[in-house]
Length: 197
Image (tube, rainbow, N blue to C red; front, side, top):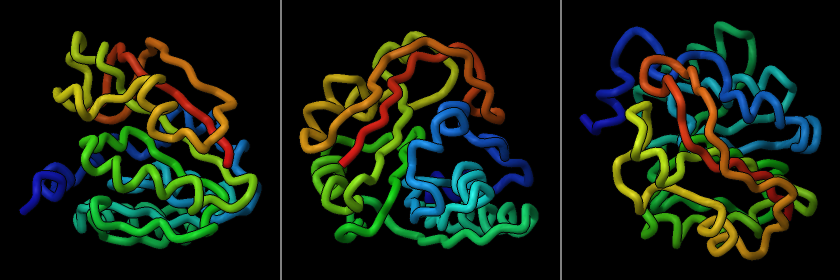
């Protein structure tokens, strides 16, 4: 069993069933009714939220267990959610496929980002939007969630360097209180980004 299957194998939802606050505040920047890809969507809280806002959502995750729970959550809330079990190290984003790509606490090693991130601009349709929230290296001072490896943590500089073809309309590092299930709870240091193709 991979660590994510293990993490999601409890009856509860590890990060809760409510969407990420930043996504809930900013989702309308994604063209209405468009096709949205949620990266590492786990148990589906963000994908299901977007499906409830009438987006056509594909949730991709490594964990079969997480995606099964995502499908249950979608069914319980009466929405359609397309799920794809895949390793982002080998996943193809396609060309001009997406009106939005959402990356909420999708922490990847730089080796995987080097293959995934260059695909993002071309995989967005013209006017498509990339939405991200991730922990910054300053999060290591808090014990409130996120990876302990600085290579997997993000900041404004990394995002600008790794996504040079996107135009950032919002890019900020903030300290905020996060309450997302039992694994993301408390004061946290994050980077928030909205970028357009």
